[in-house]
Length: 65
Image (cartoon, rainbow, N blue to C red):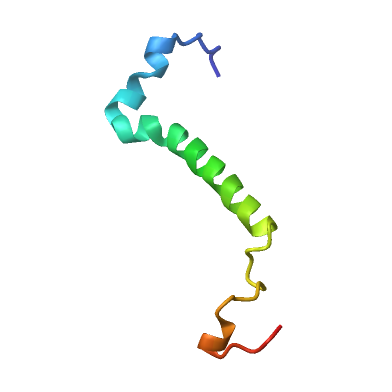
């Protein structure tokens, strides 16, 4: 196998331009959703999970916990 030559930043970014703006922004969107997940997890940790007791359990005839 022949030795590889170093690639410049301009040559590396050619494929990103061909794929479009959505492909380039994917990393930013992932970070945003990751932060949103952390916020939601914090809400669940504060007692709003699946096993919480509803305030209106009599209205919905839910069994007491």
